[in-house]
Each structure stands twice: as C-alpha cells, then as structure tokens.
Amino acid sequence: MWGEMLGVGMPDDHQAIVQWYQTNGLTSTGYDLQLHQQVLGAYNGFLDKWSFRSSFPTASSLFYEIGKKSYFFWQKLMENGRMCDNNDYLVISGWESTLGENHSGLVDAHRNFRTDPSILKKAMNPEVLVVRPKRLVLKPGETANVDVHLINETGRTGAQTLTVTVFNPDGSVLYSQQRSVTATGGDVYGQMLATNFTFVPRTNGTVRIDGLLQASGGTGGVLTNEVELLVVDPLAGAPILPRIVVYESSNQIASAVANVLGVTPLNSSHLTDPLDVMVMGAGSSSTWSYQTYNTSDTISNTSDSGLFQDQMYGKTGTVGSWFGFAPGNITVQLDFAETFFGATNSRIFDVALNGTTVLTNLDIYQQACGRDIALVKTFTVNSTNGVITLSFPKVSKDNAQIAALKITDATNKVTAVVFSTSSFTDHNGLVWQPLATSLMPILSITDVQWQTALNQVYSNGVRLVAWPNGISEAMVFANRLTASNIVSVVTWNGNNGFLAEANAPWLGSWYFARQHWLLDGLPVNSVLGWQYLVPHLGADVGAMLIDSTPTCPMDVMIGYGRDHEAYVGVGCAVVQYGNGLIVLASLPGLRDALATTNAEIT
Image (tube, rainbow, N blue to C red; front, side, top):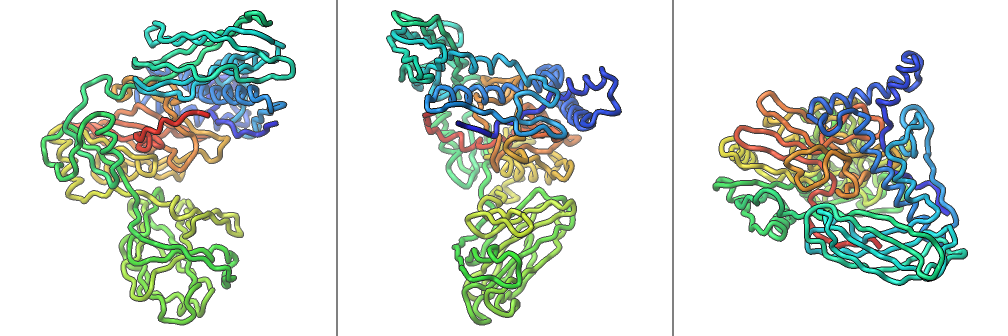
C-alpha cells in the first residue's frame, strides 16, 4: 500500500473562483476571496505586460494548461501503483483543505477540475494498456526503447496479440511490430507484457506511440493506449552562429558547444574579436579551501551545543556569498568556539564582511575565556545590493575556524548556515543549512571584461547568452545587469530579486511558456511539463523578479509561479541592449542538461 505521495501542487482556477463569488453575490463575505483576487490580479497583470494573451487568452486558460502537469504526474503514479502486482491498493491524499488554494488535490478549493479529467481516467479504467518509453526526450538518431504493461481487473486471460506502432511527426508510420503475448489473469492484476520495442526517430517533433492488444485465442476485447515522445534536434532552425566565445570556470558549456553544435568555441581572451555570440556561466563564490573538524565535547554558553561541534577550518580565502536580502542594514551573526587548542595565542585570524575587516587578530580561546565555550559576534553591514560576503583575509597562526553564520535583513528574512556537511535544527526550530548548499555563485569575470562584453553587445550586435544552472546563478547575472542599468530588480513581499522554490513539496511551482523565437522547435503555449524535464523542487528552482529599464526593452517568454504567491516571476527573458540581445534564463539544471547521460527510466 502507498499513502501520501506529496503530489505536484498546482494553482487553483482563481478566475473561476472569483467569478463564482461575483455571480453568487458574495463579494464581501468570501473567506478566501481576497487571496484569489490578489493571485488572479498578478497573473492577469503578467499576461498583459509580457504579451502572453495570444497564448493564454484568459487566466483560466493558463491555469488549465498548468493543471496538465499535475494530472500527468498523477496519471503515471496511478499507472505505476496499479501495474505493480505487489501493491494491494493506492491512497491518493490531497493533504489539505485550508484557507486559500487546495494545492495538491485533484480538484481546486471550489472543486473545479484542474484540467481535462480524461487524463486521469486513462489510468483508472479497469483495464489499462500501459505503453512506457524508457526515455521521453531524444535527439534524432537516438534509439527509443519501449516496454508494455497490462493492468488487468477484468479477468482477461490467455493468448493475445500486441501491436506497437510508432508515427512520425507528419503522421507517417516509423515503426510497427506485432508480438504474441499471454495475459495471466486471475489474481494477477498487473504484469509486464513485452519489453524492448526499439526504433530510431530521425525527425524533429512529437512522435506518437500506439499500443493495441486483442485476444487471439484468449479472452478480452480490444484495448488501446498511446503516449508521446519528443524528438529535439539542436541543429534545427536558424543557422548556428559560428564565432562563439565561452566564459566559464569549468569546461561544461564549451564541451557542449563543441559536441552538440559542432563549433569549437573561443576562450575569453577573444572577447574583443569579431564575434557572433558570447556565452557565460557562473561558478562557486567560494575560494576558501577548508577541512572539517568535529568534537563530541559539550559546548557551553549556548543552548545549541551541536551547532558548534561541527566546524570548518582553513587558510585565507573568500568563504562565500549569500544574496536576496533587502538592501540596507543587514545583521550578521558569526558563531565560533575553540574546540581544538587549549591555550591562547594558538589560532589567530582576521574576519571580513563585504571586504571590510570586522575582526582583527581574533583569538577565539582568549575572547571566549577557554576551550569549548561558544563565542558569538554580531555586526551590522550596510549592503546596497542585498549581498553578504564572508572572507578570511589574514591568518596569522594555524587556521581560521568557524561554526555557524546567521544573516537577518530588515524584513526579518533569515539565512542560517552551519559549517558542516549536514543541516542542524536549533532549540527554536530554526534549520541551519550546510555551507555547500547555501552559497551564492559568482561570475568569475573582471569589471573590464564585463564592460568589454557589454560593449560588444551594444555596439556590435553580439548576442550575450547567460547560461546559469538555476535561480542562484541567474541572480548573479541579474545583479550584474542591474548594476549596469540594463534591467531592474524588483522587491515584492520580502522577496528581493527572485522567487525561490515552493515553500513545501505539496504546494508546488510551475513554469509556463508562450510562442517565441527563442523556443523554436520546443512545446510552447503550455506548462513546461515532461517535455522540458524541469523539476518543481530543489535549490535551483525559482525565477527572477526583474523588469525592463527605460532604455532596454525586455521580452519575456517563460513565466514562473508557486503556491499562492500573488506575483509571477520571470523564467526566461531577452533584453535589447543597443544593437544586440542579452538572453537570461533561470530554469533549474539548465547547464547540467548540456551533459548527455542517456539515462533510462527503469
């Protein structure tokens, strides 16, 4: 048996709900009306401002498309649960019936279906022929592999004929194979019928796979089903621009440009050459080489001894940067404890925040008055861009060592970091993130190189493509562009510059796209569903809160929403800067997707 499965949260049909209140004369008494009005207003504003109306004429039409992602998830979950014969029953829990949206339910708060319920019905019939590709997205020339399962609650038994037929995007037959199979029946309700139907799509577009099962001596009627694959040709469409400079700290983008596009890219020393495209990737904001140290000793002078038991130590370097705070005065708390040495003058180092030294010749043992005693230092930092950077500019004796860091801005947004490989929950219930997962990435480019790149865009029409791996890296580019007055960063409801992932797994988040030249050959006017393989949870999930400036028009083609936020973020945009264009996206895993893994669904 399976129970709560988290689901994939989707928005309610806010337009339908608001209209229901209006139709029934309940515009002053609806307990959740104000929330639905606020969210609906945000989506309507986004659709109008960024020219999404031709793709989604109404907000309801957008919510309907977004709902397909949820129902696709539940369809596959139902199929999985039923075709595994070891499962006795499946419980789908909607989790909540609270103020506002019913995020993870099959219907919304007013019992409206989120989208076409026939998507669910296909997985709930007494008999289902489950046609299951092992990969959903391929490029031309790659081999597709398909298995077929049978969900059988009708007593079908005996000899059957199974036919799998595959259709090209133009409707012509690509592949067809017929096999003899046997339906077990009886108390076997889920079984594998046949495996490894293989074929090679060679045309860009959607490929349809039809399955047909009919009795050939056994019992049962005709049973059919169909699924789709997406074939994407990275070389289709406009000609590849050949003169490409790649600027990155690794070799990930350069390898992809060479292997996928067949172009040998130039390195950053060619920034002033005649170019077509500049592609940039961000990297880690940390230059600090550290090691971990832990103790089982009890740490005194604190209610959270465990917060100080795991620490990191190392020589000079930038520990990292954290962003997204409200500009202005930000409180930074640094937590130390000497857990190794038993005397003063054993460990001495300086600590800097945003490049300004705030602790000179720090001797933890001396200032804490002994070993295994917590030492907490608190500072106020005025940050004009909402970024806090911690560094150790000087180490006079042994190594710098730190236990934890907490950052709090004027809106009470808190980021708590423990210098450990695992998180820590303190006595107040605050979760402290491990250092590695909390860090803000950086763009390893000098101010001169950045200005050279912008001059190439503005004067020579060279295209600049920022290729981040998610929202944290996207904000590195967004902040740079803001400092150059090319875009503006928006602050909304304590979110400075970006909307992060959903606040809980069942609340959900979603990207959606309209028709645009940047997305040629990809599904548009829809939610970014299985075709895009975009996750809805994780540290890289999110979108930018950015806007155009008076001199730099911006075109948005991908939007992003989450749970019941009354704001829609920018998932991808193209900015006009002088004679050229700047492309900026925040889709999670976008750079990692360049590495082909050929991973199959097993």
